[in-house]
Length: 186
Image (cartoon, rainbow, N blue to C red; front, side, top):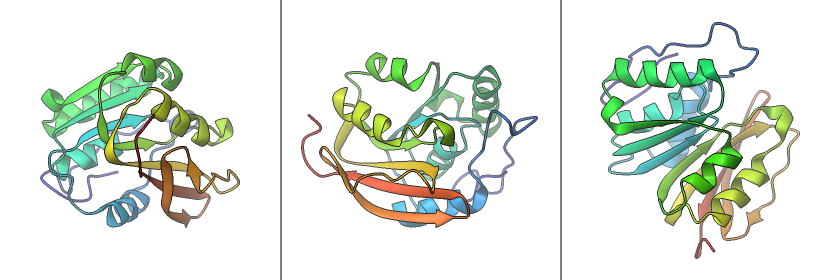
């Protein structure tokens, strides 16, 4: 795994010892996701739920994002997020939060994110719960974009509250749904 573009382009990321618990987003899917989102993330504040290695948020930082909060509950994932942020020189821009997403969202209340990534374990089928939680805790800045990676079998609605699906792509067993905040987050 490596950073695909930006200031850290080509730099390697540390990955999990086994893929039983952490399923990193492949370079190909990350590149495709940023092709849809736009290549640059100048000044954005990013939230990465189920961060794993931190690859999605770190890719956004490499492309100009200002800050990122990486949330995960796994011990190995938390260590990888911190290790990768430090190796890329982004540790001052990264906050690593040890928490489940259900507990993290209320803790983040009062903060606003322009770009959110969520890559929950496919078995959880938590895509809708993540979208509803982001709205309920008012974590989205006006016009925010949310990318949810999920199994092909998990079907997400075209609209969840003020979030409207604007794109979706399938890469093997991985499906990526991209939502945009089209109105007030409440």
